[in-house]
Amino acid sequence: MRRFFARAEVAVQAVDVVVIGAGAAGLMCAASAAARGRHVLVLDHANKAGKKILMSGGGRCNFTNLYTEPANFLGANPHFCKSALARYTQWDFLALVARHEVPYHEKKLGQLFCDRKANDILDMLLAECDRHGARIRLQTPVTGIERIEAGYRLALPGETLDCQSLVIATGGLSIPTLGASGFGYQVARQFGHRVLPTRAGLVPFTVTEPALKAMCEELSGTALECRVSCNGQIFHENLLFTHRGLSGPAMLQISSYWQPGDTLEIDLLPDRDPLAWLQDQQAQRPNTELRTLLGEVFTRKMAVLIAEAWFTSRPLKQYPPAELTTIAQRLGGWQVQPAGTEGYRTAEVTLGGVDTGEVSSKTMESRLAPGLYFVGEVLDVTGHLGGFNFQWAWASGYAAGQYA
Image (cartoon, rainbow, N blue to C red; front, side, top):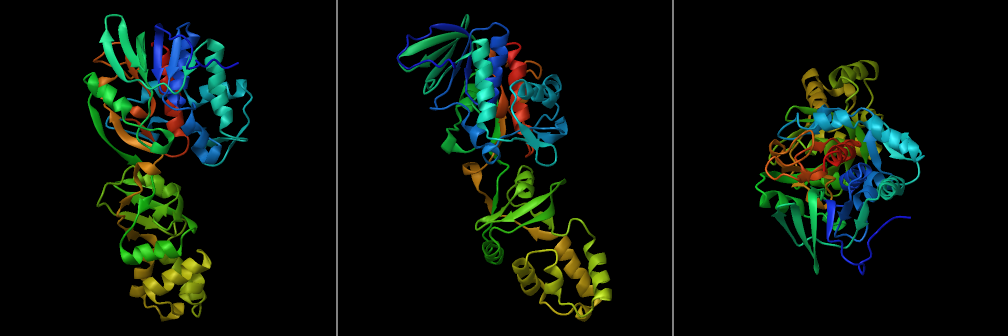
């Protein structure tokens, strides 16, 4: 039986640990701290725990990645994540999944998803909290926090609550419809922490340039494999055209490295040398129309659109070497300057956050306010798409749970 506080129960006046945020990192931290014998209470303003877990991975939760390593994360201090990731690995989480007999599969590139639904992961975390005695209280906003001699005093609606250790697991600003807010950043600033500028990450791009917008609208729903690069980063994944711009895994990945005004370079033929391919086809099939040839690697609609709008389709034999080179360069290095991104509304993560230079990489404890901990997305640690952000939640939550 899960242990939730009812709103009508007598208020708990003091506990060892309060975790604010009943998401992935918060629940992992609560279970880990309670397993050490700590009296743990999780507070969340939402009406349901783990909302982001439930919607992730199309409802199947991409809960970790077999190939997790520090290189899959970005932040001002790229070394910060190393300690926690090394002490609680993807294999440790998989062992927990196995104990709870949660069926899963690898989709691609080491991405692990639930066979059934994301509820399996949430139920597992809630069961771990219940097993170790960590309690969860929902629909309970924290209206104030102050430092006291024994730890921290929290103001709740109509009551106060004291704790020795306070863990901030409130996430970032992404997907506000799920309850995301800047509360964690407010707490960090209150206790002297620097919060690095935040922005939407793993997010689709929007376009406004008329010709490009018309192309995206015409091809909305079309997906293809590509290689995209920006600011020294390269991702080989799928691109998806939408009515608003460019999406798909490749675009989400590169969005974390893109800055306003930057240009994306997109290779639409990532598995071949465009010029060598065109020259070979011209020699073997000189009478084949360009749009017919492109239709063999793209959808027919996309092939016709590109061939007519970019090049004026003709039989291959009619293209002189210089023009064939131009076509190859365009196909292998399409230059796109997005107008922006769709923002926090659809972003999977928030870039930036609490400066990790002021937090212990071993314990996740504040270096400025003893007994205050930060875990998960609220920190300036952001993973690539593919289960890495969940692994950071598990690793950072576990790390704090060993000390809070």
